[in-house]
Length: 295
Image (cartoon, rainbow, N blue to C red; front, side, top):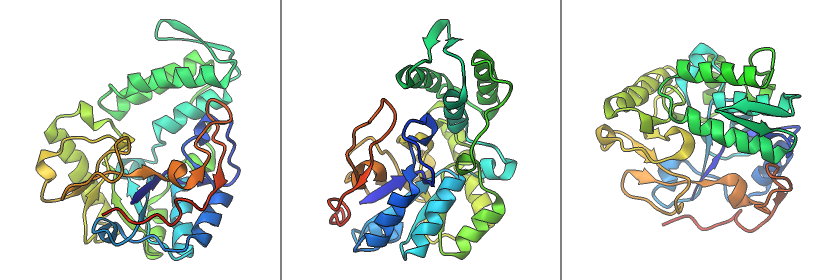
């Protein structure tokens, strides 16, 4: 089995939209310290020799989880967007979520409609609509314009204030992670919806990022995980990259070069129900911690 996480937050708050994808740090530590079998490398996991732990996005939350995994003797692969690191660019989904967490506005006029923000459910509904918009955009400049427009709609003074855990790491922190044994892998040069790009543009996204990551490590296995966890046709890469394809399909699905993942939050922790429309009630369970590896 190949598991996916976005990282850990020490002061995790289930009522914050921006924390929805992350694990409470204390529970992650409990899981990593008590798991009877260690996570193995992606290379071993794809041959059925154990379970692998993967982390998406170059955030400080991901950095924390990667170092914790190594501290407790687990292999871990961290999927990085080089453009975000090189430019110090914050991830726009987290900018968006922080705006919705921090606004004092009770309503927002966006996309021709007035949205009620008095409940977390209302804010979540607006976030889903904005995600539909930015998933149709083709570059970071267009997305940044959308973020600026949205901040104005929420009557925020400027760009979102992002807590440390959600900020983008530095190149020095990537190098530090590698020095502890973290496996850096490819999440695309920019965190874009590759379904909106041509195959040639997708190739540039993958190859440019691979060249960037080569500054920090020499990977024996080249693995690419498309942003947003969706399978994207990559005709050029059949003999160059293993694709971690889709976390919305059964995790056991695999071919020679295509493997699905499962969210660690849902697979290892329970109950997979929300105490609010966004907050996850999380508790450690033993079931799932020692699952047999996928064949």
